[in-house]
Image 1: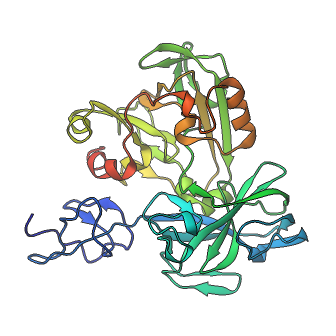
Image 2 (image 1 turned 30 degrees about the horizontal axis):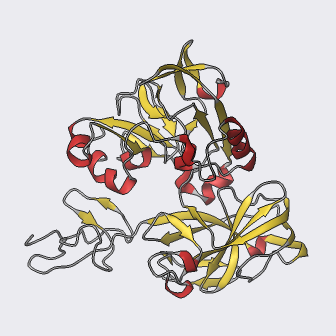
Image 3 (image 1 turned 60 degrees about the horizontal axis):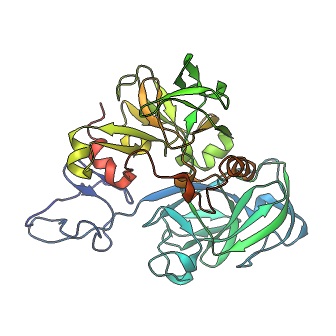
Length: 385
């Protein structure tokens, strides 16, 4: 390919999406998927598009040691009891990463070394009275599990532990006892795949709010008619938690944007069934599942600001199903694909499905092929109306 694309001068560092005319992104290394991308007419400029992930951290300055050594610079684990200040406010980190997992440094690919991982601060961060510059290396140093079932991760910058993060954050005014710890951990930046409370699901008795459903209720599915709901799980995220992890805030799909009768809200990872020639042309299948966040266009499909609480609801059947929410074909929960962070919920599902296996691989395939966010964003995002 000769010639090329000139990224706009005001393209934000770390953006990862297909622009109207090509890739926009940070100039760094040769792009792994599209090495032919050029930056100036007649001169090859190669780009490595590094997504930016946001998440919240409760600083060590907001923690109080009661026993043991929970506020520690250890690298493999710790013990003890700690409380969180009543006025604690999470600090938002923005991290450039070339994959979707936040890792301990020595397991982060491709370098697999604490000093050479690809998790870098996108913006300077001030925490515990110290400022870390953009480009500083960030790690998930180790994980702790509390006696009440929460899992928190110690965040380390340039060799210094600075605070705790997790799918849920340590809550202000709460005391936690560390039950166990584990080194060499990772966690997806994005996690939850589920409906928000208030979404209307088509059932044998007509449309019903998702949070009103119970195990045994019959729900309409695309491929297998009415199916009994085996399990329903709920997870509430406070405004405090969403401000700390804004990437978990709901995606709003306005009425008619994808053929849905009314507006609905889902989690960013909740997958929508997309059909048509684009699916066939680009992915070799007439129907594919696409994460809601890949469809955001800023007009009719938007990421909501993290300014109010959200309650996400999981629906689980004997197999992965496509159900109808406000007339839109969307997925049910797949434990093997997304997993469950809540210990009690995980145990409930394991009792219902004893053959799942340690990684939930026994649940079976997804109902339709799954397209990743980075693959779908430039194809479907342009055309969602």
